[in-house]
Image (tube, rainbow, N blue to C red; front, side):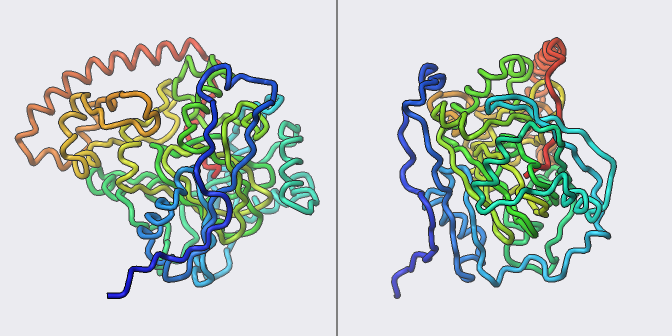
Length: 441
């Protein structure tokens, strides 16, 4: 038998061992002397052949073996055979039902985003707006020039515009890397819960203009995401290694303590912007990459990312999940202020299907199989609620689960009381910005 050949992906950029930095103490994070700042690392970039690209699951497994997930995101330059859409895009016939006007407030590298929902418009009307003289990108010779202009004028009074629409521009007959039919265990959400979650287990479209941005965030439920840039101007992405996610959260908490007192999961509101200079100064390692037309960005579980559009563009995105994600999903930190920021769903079917040996311990709050978001702490996974259990229609034909169901009902009453108290506390901090979902990336 011939020896098994490792796929000969071309890997461009730094992807080796993550830098070991002393960022664990408050003194380190708050140091202002600049004596030991971090420079950006390069994201792993893959150039697969068509044969190597065709098997999505195998490809994902390979890039994670190479350590791509340690960066928080990765870029794929697909082979020329990958054509998500053959026909031109009819912008006049494509309606956008959620257009957002963005303004940024703040100073010295720390900002908050304000979003205002505008009236629906066609994609053609959005393109006309994005390419008008007051919104088009300035002349530049390199992406670095555009990036400098972006950060130096981020709080200018000229608002930027972003739009999102449920749907797809991918040809239905596409069999390889079709965002509407990726292999994903998220299919169980529809199978077992009867839920379709737009943008989570179905794709959505993003329309950007110059300087329109997506604030620092992890994906809903700390899922994977995939973003295909169909047309026009590039996107600039920043990513933080999952290893440093908790350090980043602590840093943001110090800048916005009142928001985090009102909502411990405030970053789910997708409104926080921090410049690379702040991350350097506070010694938070980050990575930067430019996504051009036709290229693909994958973000990994608990990988914080943000970025901005370099001009008018159209992208398509969705979420997906593998069994590696389940552990992240069990420990995900949600918005808890009552604003319903972000999307959430029960982990019941995933634990029951793929971790049956932990199922009872998870239900009882005794599952200490490890928190990947914060491995230094031996924390049990949060207990499921009555809704987490009851939404799974697969339970009810099994009468042996009735005693467990009754236990959860009893426990959830106490948890509901605690939740009401938390919402009452949140109302006392009425200045907290709220948004239900960001469609920016």
